[in-house]
Each structure stands twice: as C-alpha cells, then as structure tokens.
Length: 170
Image (cartoon, rainbow, N blue to C red; front, side, top):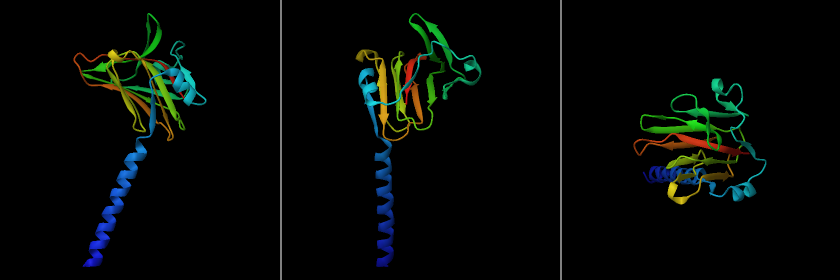
C-alpha cells in the first residue's frame, strides 16, 4: 500500500511540475510600447505598411508570407487620412483579427489605432491598448517562436473595428 501511495504522489508531483513549468514557459514575451526600443531589441525585421496592396490580397489575405484573418471573413486594406491601414471589421459585438506570422518569428509589433483593443501573441504576452495612455505602438520579443498576433475586443458597445498599420516582424 505504501508503494502505491508513493507512486501516486510521485505521478501527481510530476504532473504539477510539468504544468507549472509549461505555464511559465508559455509567458515569455517582452512587451515594448516604444517602436525605437522594440527595433533595438529585434533583429532582421520586415515591415508591412499596407501602402502598396498586393494584387491578390482581396482573394487570399496574404502579404509576404503573413496571413491576415478576420472574424467576419477577409480583412480589408482601406485608405485613411494618414494613409492605408488594415481594417478588421467587427461582427456583432466582437472584433477579432488574427495575424499568422512566418515560422521562426520571434518579434512582432504594430501600430494600432483603435482603442480600446487587446493585442496578444501566441507566446502568452498581451497588452490592452487604451486611448488614455497615448501610445499606439505595441511590440513583443520572445525567445520562443511567435506564431500569431491577435487583436481582439468584445466590449464596449458599439465595438470598434480594428485598424492596424506598420506590422513589423522578424
């Protein structure tokens, strides 16, 4: 009976250790609110500014190997008073834009002009962009590959569309 108890406790201890180690390994992105500091901490960045829309974007939502997914279907590139930006439309009360990054990406950042919005990366880091803080940039640098950058909001009503510009990744 004692051996069974030790075996059960050993298994439970091992599972708890794996859960704790796994959850700590998932949250390993450093957040930057300043583009210059993000650029200094990143290497080999590519930037999509949406000014030159590829001819096929309206069909496959891909630019330079980056796939853009919107909750309502394909996102749009629209002209604003400051230039062209990516528009992720709201469906009902939910805004959700998922940016699928190329394999091996360890840095991702963008200018984000709709507030409030939550910007998160697949490695676990997230920031809620608020008008009150005055910053429109958020960037993440991670030791682990970043697979997706997600912009989301499910309140307040009416929920604003997401507007993104100058997506940098590398």
